[in-house]
Length: 222
Image (cartoon, rainbow, N blue to C red; front, side, top):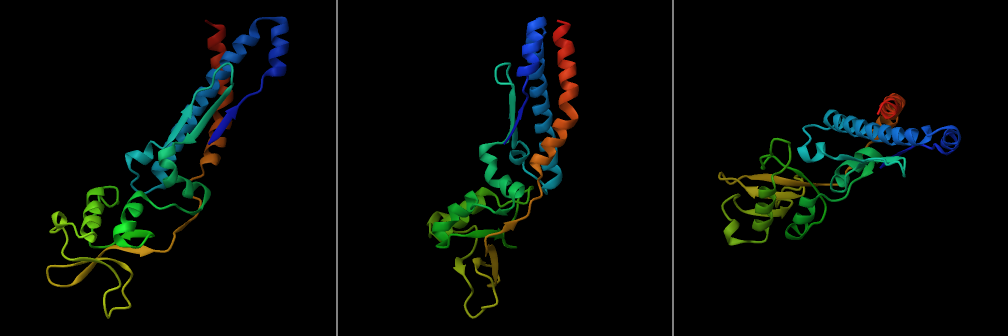
């Protein structure tokens, strides 16, 4: 979260002492803060589209903002709560929490951890594993009769007498071979690549003064 504020106490006190201009300045500052926060959120969304490969609409809508008022003279720009688990590791660096599908898979796979798709699953347009596929794998691992047929025999672990193979969720192919559906990995460590605060500082520096001048002219011309 980034908070954009402006302090007008000294200037406002002086302006109020000589005219009614102080009220207009406060109004203009609130309008300028709101417009600036909107521009920061737009720039953040555009950066998401550049930084991430095929981001989903859900991720593209990750940046929000709140408007300033004459009372607060502060606007906020933030990553929305639901998207934070996906974006924060790329903003701050470091490890990430388990994804929802990894949490869902933990119990039936008897292995809580981090997973990546293997060649045995078909990904959607955004390069992700469809939720229906995750549900199907989980159901088959739990032995649900209604789940049989999507994949041939499914099991978790390293194939017998094949220690060079990874720990994975495996499925038997029609020809009797094995193909990994999901491969377990170590906790991934992310580097910072989405400079949210840097983008915000740049946009504020380029935007606020012009927006304040514009909003003040509008206020005085009303």
